[in-house]
Length: 67
Figure 1 (spheres, rainbow, N blue to C red):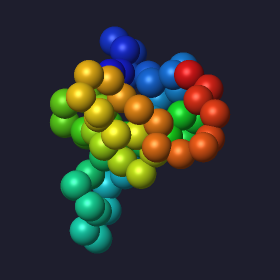
Figure 2 (cartoon, one colour):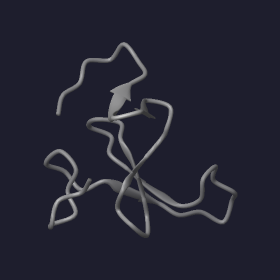
Figure 3 (tube, rainbow, N blue to C red):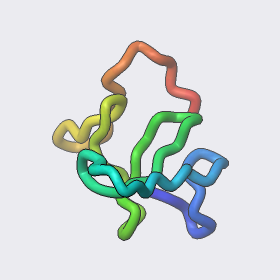
Figure 4 (tube, rainbow, N blue to C red):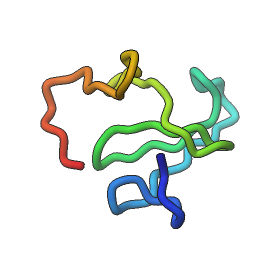
């Protein structure tokens, strides 16, 4: 979840809006930790690097978590 200042892990996520179709719609993406957030609610959403697995978010790649 984003903090009160709209930051993920110390940085504000990039906002992706496009005229082209983006899978899942417009989103915010943190290039530091690879998390994706819903543009309207600010809640984390599944993407190529993170998946919701029952009770917590789990990393889906071999990249080391920096956050």
